[in-house]
Image (cartoon, rainbow, N blue to C red; front, side, top):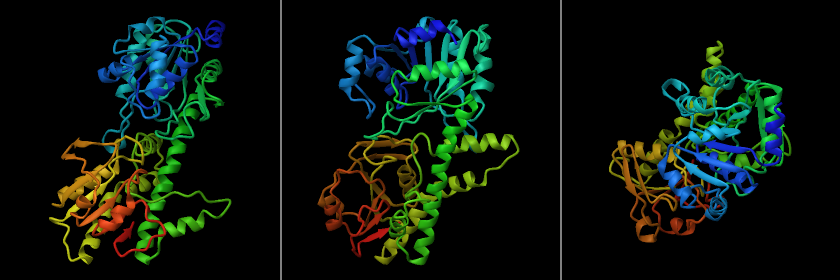
Length: 433
């Protein structure tokens, strides 16, 4: 371990760069800055950098007053240029890792960041990847790229992986109190990474290798996609049997062991669950192993918007309406409640399919004033009794908290309740998933 870097971290004199200032990077940058570190936030997105310079937060989990405090104190600055890396001691990479076609990970953002770092990296620098990716990325991809600088991993610089565990909008668990997993390419790299994160996070758990840390993240999210897939399959099964799946889940979760509740819906959204397990699926296939659970769960979840449209057609038929030319009101566009985040939101897929089926579709979402994505070009409609009563069916796709569901029940012609907001309420208007 570098005694020099260790001393800098403990004394908070280590200069930190966070590359990628989204839901993962900005909370890290702000919390390190709050502890007195000199933090440089780097992003190619000019709007993000401009907002930070104006002391205006664009992330729900970081209030503008917190951001303003560390920017005003000089502990956090932001830029789109990366030449400051010449003086940086610790670099944290938090860039996106989307999927290409056929479940292939797109590591272009990681490669771009690493190749930029390679131009500036100095001796005794710690580099940590937080971007979710397949097991082996840190060792097989990042290490060789950084060593093109002439420096050697484990000797001249230190390299680790630490999976992000951000849950946007979670009021209880933030970056400082969610246990942090770290894994270094060498024991010294792991120890330095643990020491760095201990400056802002209550508990840090170190695993033996970067590959184990990479796998940890994928295991967590694969657990979720599989169980959500099962909840969705159970919902479809219960519908065929005329059983209320929500009642069944509530009953099952009374068991104090051996069961954890997951709930059905339109599918999965956000930056983790739709993609992360498929990195693992892709990597496993390269080792001659096909994960049937991952593929099946992904297929079930991605098919849920189509299933919802078919169910909606059945609801309309009971009311002597056809799906074509019907007026449908989708309540909630974001992928989870009370969060301004549209990434991979299944509500968007639902709207697209309804439009393809020649429905007249409108939506309402208190967090999203307009939608201009792909074929969708809509403005959020006000939730009032006049508007609600105009539609053949209201689909509750996302269960935002500050919504008058009682008014919707009173004035809607029919309701397709995907999120069980009308739990315990009996009405001929309501159909649940």
